[in-house]
Image 1: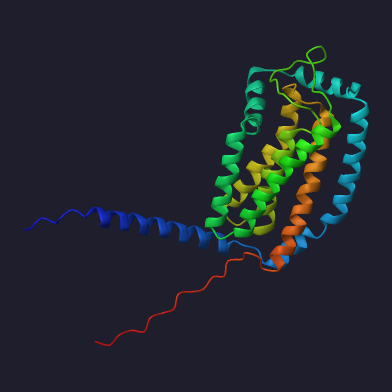
Image 2 (image 1 turned 30 degrees about the horizontal axis):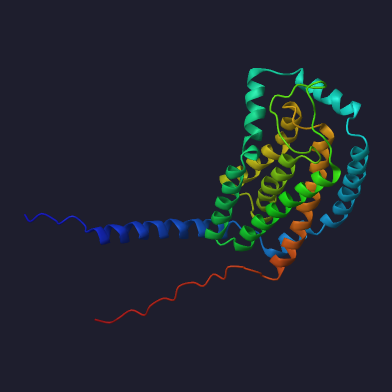
Length: 270
């Protein structure tokens, strides 16, 4: 019996490309089948306008206050109380939660990878929104810190477990996490019906990062509690503005993938 020749290099490459394309198509179909309609997206984002005004007023008031009062007794008290809970496992947890935001390269890489995933599964507007929103948030954080000029906590008041440079208000980690993880959480709430296991992963993981990053910055002695509070306020304000813009663009079908089913080929008679 003659032996079969092994597949050539070109055939192996074509086979690999075929498998990769099939995997991408399955991912696209999985996302498409679990999507909510556009009118639901708009309805879920329409309530954010009032929320925006409240967050902006509160942030402005807090920013003005800490600009003229760099050290607040309540901040020192909160940090000292939180650091009294120190344990080795809590040190590891708080450091791990903050780690992504501490590494600029890792943060940028994570944003790019997530945007590429969105693009591949035909969530193209979401990919662009993610990049633009996180970039704007980072730039505004730098401007706020330069304008308010609040110094960071010092060792004569609290323990500094992880030293950081630059100004303190508002927390860059918290703003960055609300921008990235908060937007992922929002997309998970807005876009999907939550009828698949990965829908819940898309909600739980981002929510944990957003919730834990604030306490971690205070626990590590990098920020005052008011830095964290201000960052949550302005971060949520920016997020809600972005989601409002996103909802309007979504309604207009901007960058919406148009699925065209393959045409059936007529059968040939032999």
